[in-house]
Image (cartoon, one colour):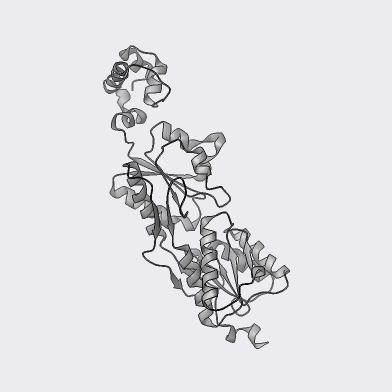
Amino acid sequence: MARLRDVAARAGVSVSVVSRVLNEDPKLRIREETRARVLRAIDGTNYTHNHAARALRLRRSGAIALLIPDVTNAIFSEPSRGVAETAAEADLVVLLGRSEWLDAENNVVAKLSHQGRVDGFIIQLRDEERSTKVLDLLPVDAPAVVMNWHQHKGLSSVAMDDFEAARLATSFLVDLGHRSIGLIGGLPQTSTARARERGFRRALADAGIAMRRDWMTQFGYTPGAGRVALQHLLSAGTLPTCLVVANVNAAVGVLSAAHDAGLDVPEQLSIVAIHDTWIAEHTSPPLTTVRMPFYELGAAAARTLMGVIEGGGKHHVLVRDPPPVIMPRRSHMSPAGSRRARR
């Protein structure tokens, strides 16, 4: 296989010039005829097998990157499948990585973009990160879509109907007869947490139920955050008869904390969680959830990114089909039949 110096010798330029042409260095100042000579030298050697050279000639790498907070998290399996299958239909390969790649000290995203390894990025931020971080660390004009974020100001975004999911979960509990309802929410800086809180508030208002701020938490979506949230409510002295938990992973922590506190779910505390994964079927008791269009979220993100790559402009997509739906299991019951009501 030819090396950079072989290409440089054939083109009559330095190795540095070849490297900078391959990496599309915007600060490189050479005549167009010199650039053309370098490209002909690339084509005339085995160095054409180099990925950066091929991307330079075709202006496409044939790959996109999907960055998610945790590749082992069950919540991300269906969005990832949606991205991969939709990309495959367009003959695109998906490079899977963690959103830590956006870290300033080792910004792999910038390297992938500058080297022409990928044509664009689908990014799911970690909950604790600022939404502007993507703009801070992405190369200028790099095609990108933020997934699970509502109306990102600087980039295209794709999200599910989190408002309706929380409204549906809360209305389900209201219809069972509950009137004291709490919310285990996400971190307030995330757009999904804000949308779910609005849906929760709307359902209570529609039912004429006063919202109690002391029955609402904003610790996040992890099992640890769910555990801390229930402990916080217990320390306040009173509990609602039921909880809407804004994420199924947090609900696992809520169940664990309830068990440690000697609370029976659902007889003393009903729980409905947003999102449905295989985990929900294997908790004790199995969790009642709101199923969301995860696969369709990933597919929409891939299609949106393809449009951005082709110069289609910025778009904000809300995935509403299929709509959120309740998946009833055994973590809920009516307050009339609960042990608390019989006392």
